Image 1: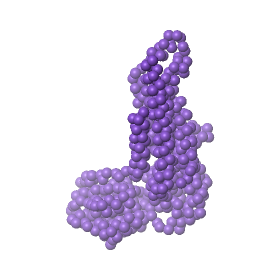
Image 2 (image 1 turned 120 degrees about the vertical axis):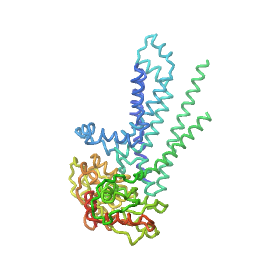
Image 3 (image 1 turned 135 degrees about the vertical axis):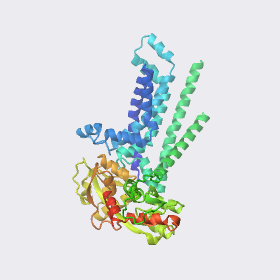
Image 4 (image 1 turned 135 degrees about the horizontal axis):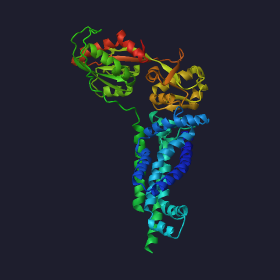
Length: 227
Length: 286
């Protein structure tokens, strides 16, 4: 078993989650504040698509945007950046595929914050940015955290879109899921077991972490409201 | 607390199971056998087929790479001369078809992309070995995108390419051929270190057509299927492949009342007219 796919996957998921967390949270914040319900519904639908489409379809769209002959891809190529078939492309795939999980978690987390706290803050004249930073985000923290963990785990397991735009190059873009696929179809079962075991354990620990965090938070919240 | 832990465990197991299932089922989807081509034109032109009033029905199980040529041209052409013969085509990888025939697929003709599967079926008594003919040859070629600039002029200097796409030799036959060619040229290790390994030939083709990879190794027929987006740089150097890519066709050993129509179709496939069609799709008649 070669160790590089494990390192590549962890690196990809770690960098991807930074982008996913910030972009997903900000999008959810902006759309939560939007007034037009129809526009909100459409934004929700678009931002959820990568989650429900087969990753190969999402990868297909990405290829048609970032491919070297395509609009954004040729623009980048003009700047001397070749995104496809690079490690950066694995990050891009992970961000786009895991964004819906972050976005939806953040939307739900913001929705669950009782508006009375925000109204109270407004009556004492707190700036909106300060309300978000001091009140909304802390209250939504458990939801944001679990969304972040889900997104990280999803990024770790990304396969279809990665193969489409990042390829399957040893030491560059061969992530654990791609290595597992190669091993399985190539009949190298022991190698596959190794990667599968690592992937399952890491994902398990992270997803388990979600319940620990949400449990602890909701416990504290309950106590507070009772007093 | 307990409940949520349990939920987390169950969720993880489901994810793990889904992952395994996802990996296992990534084989090329089996296209449904299209219902017998009812394009029976009213033009009984006395083409190569001597039997005037041939009737009947049969099924041909053919390698996926033959689907375009058969469905697109050859079966309609045969039906022009023999409007009363209903032909059903089923297309998949030769290995899968071999399994299906062994498990009872009632196909009268088997058209394989490699001798291995045909030999196995003949030895198993499913195919009449006296009927097997090596009809076509496919070539392994080096391709690049029509809009891609490359310094590569053949398999010899393939390592000059910035990105190389080949099928994963562990599972893709075209990739195994690529490995064989490059090993004989002494550049396999260098290529393997930088190549992107596709899980099937179509993926390799897409990578090259989209310009993600500078060059790729596919069959000539694959290149012909996307002639507007990829061009052939070179074919495999003489002697670099021990076993040529041969497509044999054979008849089932249990034809029943479908013998006449099936035999007529094989005769038709061997006619100069049909071979010209195969050539159009990138095959080399043998």
